[in-house]
Image (cartoon, rainbow, N blue to C red; front, side, top):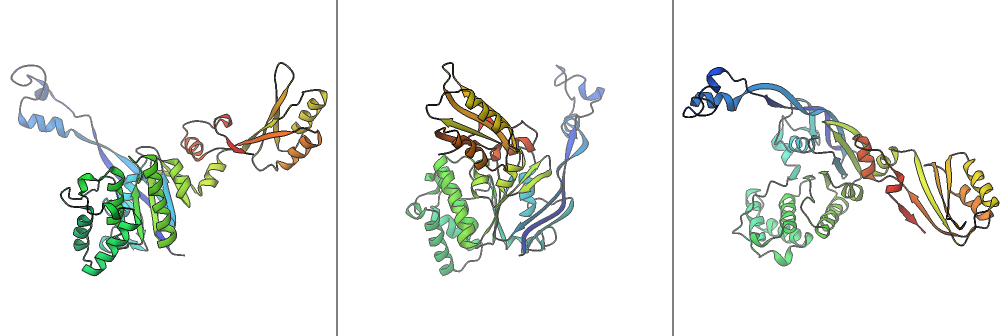
Length: 372
């Protein structure tokens, strides 16, 4: 299968300014003889301009291959390079080293051909007239894109229905909520029926219901229209919910790239089970059972929960994440214990993200997935 997007050793540097070098003539006298400051217009320019300092590497050798029809998420802290990468792919920023391709087209050498295959939905790219209705705004852009009248009408009708804006199509844009404005951006991006869609923080600023609705639309675009979707996000639930694969970028370097589940599970090698019982008394036989559980290969520890009256409420068992729990359950059932509930605690994608970016360690007690 052809790669829709590919980057090879991609590097982007931004110049930064060192603190300005100021001489006696710049700092003597101030304005009107008071205080401290430049004494002339040229002195102001020198202070503002400063001296060119070192470069900041926003991207440091990015290698990515994104398959056609894939929903691919890019995660990373602020300043990690997510927006820079998206702007390079949609030809808004020129990279310094390496290569970037859209369906084999070089984004630096063939930008016009690249833009025929993708559309970017960026939060700052409004570009809609507040005086026009939602439909009129789309009709305006269909003219810019060179769509024929009949084709434009059919496409606009379809997109307004697809995004749920059909009943608000004749409302002025100024009456649109943030969520509706975001949907109209999506409509505009889809006017040309491009194969690749790039999103930078697609659900930022949306309420939970609008964000869930937007994610649903992205899934439908991937599933029904076979679009390739590349999105950057801080929303880890969003990434786990809709992405086939994700990459974590930190300080301009890709530190992990895999499916959300694989990334989530690769961070820790342990799973924690809480087994709760009904009406049990902790006695010598229960002590033997706990010792027996602790000796199972793959079990790292079994801790009984017993109150001051000797009531045996449950067990906390630390085990290898690949351990077959049936071995544990067999021993418990043979002792005649009645299991009320079993909780399994596993790392979330947020836990994995924090660990990979070296921001904290995972604590099993903080996250619980419950099975009954």
